[in-house]
Amino acid sequence: MSSTTVIQIKRVVSLALPMAGSRFLQMLSGFFATMMVSHLGKIVLASCALINATLTFVLLIFISIVFSLSFIVGQSYGAKKYDEVGALVQQGIILSLILSIIMIVLFYFVTNILTLFHQSPQMLVYVRHYFHALMWGVIPIMLQSCLEQFFYGVLKQRLVITVNLFSMFVGVLSAYILIFGKCGLPALGVTGLGLAFAIQAWFDFLLLLICCRVLKDFKKFELFKTRPVAHWIHLKKIFSVGWPMSVQFGGELGAFFVMTMMIGWLGTNALAVVQVTQQWMFLIVVPIFAMAEASGILVGQSVGAKELTQLSVINRTSLWLSLSLVAMVDVGFIFFPHFFASFYLNARDINNPQIMRFIHPLFILMAITLILNTIRDVVSGSLRGLLDTQFPMKMGLFVMWCLVLPLGYFFAFPLHMSVVGFRLGGNIGLLVGAVAIYWRWQIKSRTVL
Image 1 (tube, helix red, strand yellow):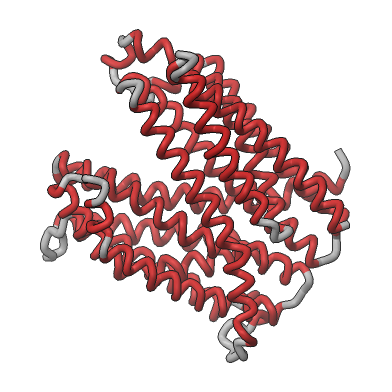
Image 2 (cartoon, one colour):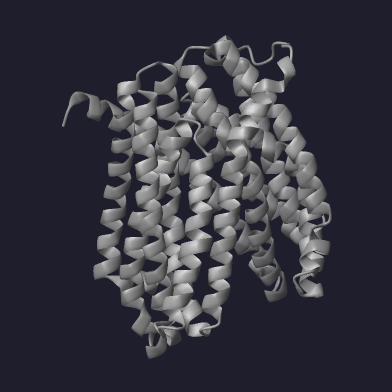
């Protein structure tokens, strides 16, 4: 292994680990909050499932646009254009405020939208209370995301995870006090949960802002300097690079939802076993996505620094690190599927042959899915470092809607392969997507050179 490769391994790992850790901390906040809310009754708990699904979809659409800031800042930072970095962050803040206004309107009318999907009126009462409370936190949520992407772009990822750790404690403590009515406050239930997350978002954003103001490392960016808007060129660039990511993630999530609905046609047993494998897959995706984003940021910095020979090394290093992680997990999935399934199945389900007969083949197929998705995600991340987001978007939507869904349906129903057919057909589509994305990287990286 060459010294260059070793250096890039250290760079990728040192950036990706704190990013993954930050996302796990955010997931942990939601986990603790759900545990608290579960004590309020099954209707409230069911409402939280609807709340989480809606919130995840909306945040994915809006925050994905701001993700582009880390790649663009990375290029300017690599080129040592520090004033340009400051201008990018300022206009990123303005874009985040604009997106916040749209999101606030969505949250205000969220129950009207969900009524169109024939959701339970009793559940929608709790959904409305939650989102109307969370509206107070929309602005800091977007501003926090903007500053986090800036921090990642200039390699201050450890600050982000430190701030996230403190804010998690603030959020969990606030949730406990407001949900159950402690410290002399009234018990607010689901409304308290929304307010707690709003408080956590404000705390997180203000801590990041204080870091920008007082730490010496940020002085060179002159973030608080008054600058001319210059026809909003930076805002337009952030949006033009970011919106394809938003469309891609939203479109792929929509396809995933449709597939889940179709699997539901096969019965509750099929849906239950798919949920087991998906829970593990969602867990593994977090470090893989962090690795993909780290690859994109480092590629962007190398482009800015004119170190173009490092592009292929960064992509290759990120890809092999990610695949090595997936390979270790896949060994467990293939040889010990029942052990992993036991975390999500009760004793009655474990003794149900209609469920257990699917466990082993689905874990094997999911192991393949993880490999193919890892290639797609990491190489797409590297492409984003070159500010190429439209091809991954187009290919991602084509693969999910024109290959994965139709092939999954064909194998599951006409070929009578049931839920295994969905995974098998889906993997064929993902293979096409992985090959296409890797081919695109080979072309684009050579063009830059």
